[in-house]
Amino acid sequence: MLLSSLPSHPCGNVELEQYSTSGDVAASWLAQIAAFGDLNENSVVVDLGAGNGILGIGAALMGAAQVVLIEVDEKAC
Image (tube, rainbow, N blue to C red; front, side, top):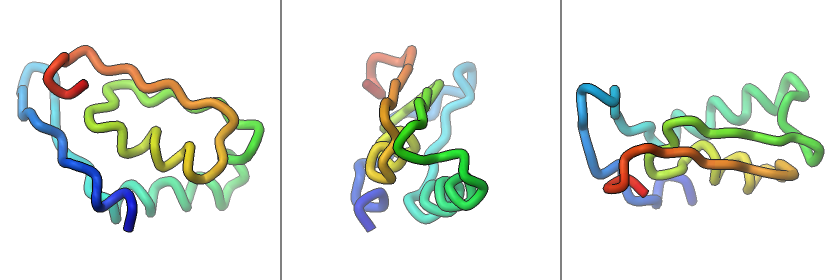
């Protein structure tokens, strides 16, 4: 629910292949990654093209040791 409450990605720049990831989709992806043991308290996660940071924030909430969000679009930041 927390991920779904984040503001959506503010842009739709085709050249940067920008799109929004819903909270439900992000939570599902993160749960699947965690189920395989690839997301835990020792994980370092890099969210490239982070947009609104939904995946990085989700990884942090799930206990990743370190999360780095990288975004080139200043409007999204």
